[in-house]
Length: 80
Image (cartoon, rainbow, N blue to C red; front, side):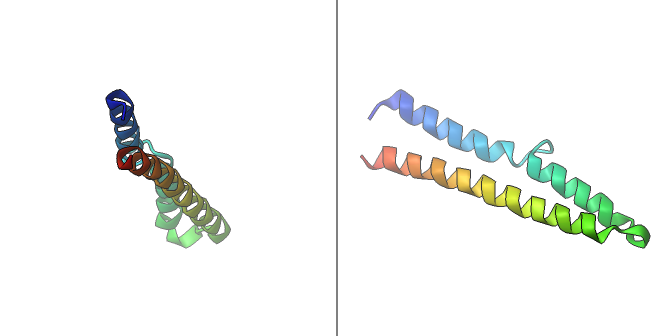
């Protein structure tokens, strides 16, 4: 196993997870939009809320799909 390649793969995996836990992540941005829509309860546009919920679910699925690929690469690399 190439030590540089292993470290690079682990770094990429950890960096990807960290990026999606910051205030600037796409998931966080959608959450903020959704919260803003829901905080105005009197005039809530439920069609917009539904669209944001779908968008949020899609973004979460996509992020975890990428985590799965990266995790698979890490496992494969360290397994032999």
